[in-house]
Image (cartoon, rainbow, N blue to C red; front, side):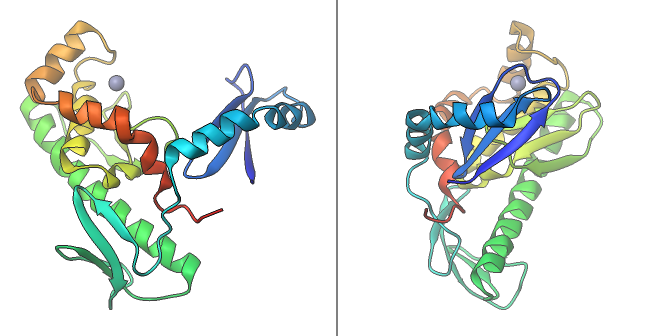
Length: 219
Ligand SMILES: [Zn+2]
């Protein structure tokens, strides 16, 4: 299993994350690579448990069925390299496998970015804050982030969650435009934006880890 090594000046210890079938090891700048690798070898049980919680890999190949914002869609051959979403299909121009997977991911990222921006702009209007840039990211352990000037980042894997789950993450990040913390005041803002968020949040706690399996090639 390949391990992606990352050095981080703010990191104070070895940190292991498993997402999308990729093992990422973060070590402090002063950390010794040899020590880190020896440490990882002792974490096999943890790694296996994390991989298992993601479930079986669901590669992006022709014929794969994916949940896309709550609708089941099949990847089928199409004409456009950028992909075209139908009621139950994502039609994409055929190409050798690695390139096809990246085309599918790009189409899904574009879709989730459009939908997230729509939700965020609605919430920002309600809160009467200025619109800010929105982008999608590949995070291992978070669903969204809101920067100091309101720029908002959304985990693209939310495209595999029901539509209302994406909306609840957008409401959460929008509420951070008013309160940059998780205080009672923050939740008061959030409750006003989206009173019916409990089910979506519960869904994410229960199924969130599974979202990392999509797009992963079987080991
Ligand atoms: Zn938050």
